[in-house]
Length: 122
Image (cartoon, rainbow, N blue to C red):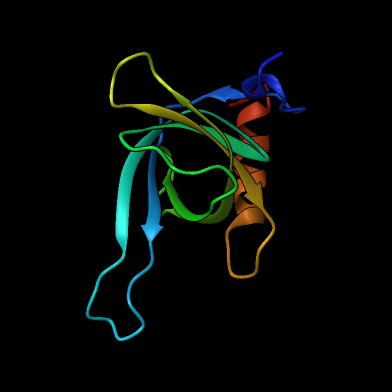
């Protein structure tokens, strides 16, 4: 079993826009944050898989904002890179992001939205 198959919960195939902060803004505000725009391939209550155009190191903590297609606002989460895989010879990588508990994030909202999507009525 490869690392991509280690998640314990059900995954939903979902193509959502994911904004990844790969470098924080400078404390003085002169240098803006570096944001990488990507797309999810699947999501779960505790993680998501995204495709990016640059590698990111394992165990890196990242602030992400997810714009779900059926939601009016972005959900902000703290994540950790759990695995990285390059897509053949392309300059594209797959990342496995684990959602972490953190103050001032939308973790509860995220878990509720994923649970709602898992319900038969969705």
